[in-house]
Image (cartoon, rainbow, N blue to C red):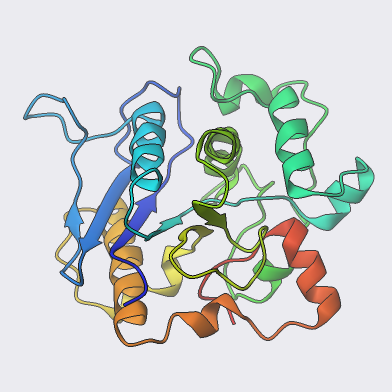
Length: 255
């Protein structure tokens, strides 16, 4: 196997960064074993839920370790090209910097809902990224009403920026923004969409959020264990489509 640890994260953009949320769940498969639920560190025995702050710290420490790990996170990593062109944004790092100026959702007293009112940096919910057009059910990162990833995306992006800045360069590959080809012995952080995987398995997890995180970790482990993960890093895109995906991002597993 290419990776020693396979981690699935079901994300939530509800409330505040320090709020413990049922929708934040982490499952991890180590050394080819079955995925197991990861409990929040230093929490009372009866506390099952994570905060976004604690989750980000867990991910950071994991990426700073010596073992190559792959982490799949269930929220959008970027916005559609129409939005990026409108605001003259030409790189993913520039997008992250620009985003946190208007959506500082990693601040302890900020939430997506609070920042939404009067915010001039809101896209159109009809706008889809290319990877979303390649699926039958993925929602726009701007669709805040009903089920979707808009809240989790707007809450999660600042933490990706923090990881990008604090983890040593070359230790982690943010796929596909750092390229579709992943260097050997490098950890990977990638966007995932649990709906692609959850029906494949009989799942032991307790609730829908745990099931989604478990399914992601299970799929990553299974694909890596059978040497079938690498083709998913190289979806069949034209050069123009690859260039678009290097800005918009891509969902690992969509091909």
